[in-house]
Each structure stands twice: as structure tokens, then as C-alpha cells.
Image 1 (spheres, helix red, strand yellow):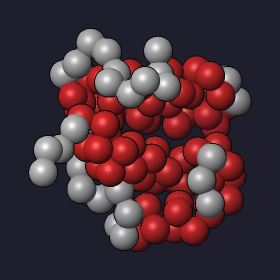
Image 2: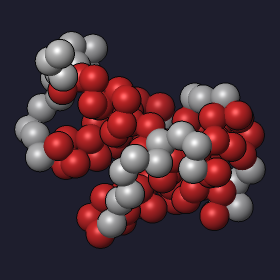
Image 3: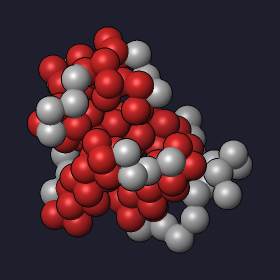
Length: 108
């Protein structure tokens, strides 16, 4: 079976970004419910991210972790619109994949 880039993004990369971001938000004192709202996921998803049951396949270091930490601080400070949050997710995904653009048709 052919594995398309979109499959890897949806199954691995996005959950890993969300898990790392959820952990950073909670470490900044944001509740799991507030983190869930910021990430547009259920509170149970945040719980699963934090316990390693979801989004655990990729562990970030260096550049990606720095971006995620800054993003978490911006969310906490209220300095980020939903549109800019989406753009940051795309930026992180592109860096991870070493790509200039996103293969998903819904993202421009």
C-alpha cells in the first residue's frame, strides 16, 4: 500500500505537535481544559497527549521545541489569533518534513 504524505501528517506529525504544545501549555500553568480549547481538541485528548497515549511517536528537540515553546507562550499571553496558530502549525510541519509547501489541499 502506498503511504501518501498526508497520511503521515495526519497520523503522526500533527498529533505530535499537539502533544508537545499541550505539554508546554500545561507546564506554563494552563489547565488541561484551557489547553484543549486552545488546540480545538477534547480535554480527553490533552490528557492522552500528556500521558503518552497519543501523539508520542515523534519527540522534538532544538529548533522545533524552541518554536513550540514560543508558540505556547504566545497562546498563554493571548498574542495569537486562530489563523496565526494554524500558520504556525503549518510552519512547524514544513520544518519537520523539510518541505517548502504543504501537500494538503485545504492548506494554502
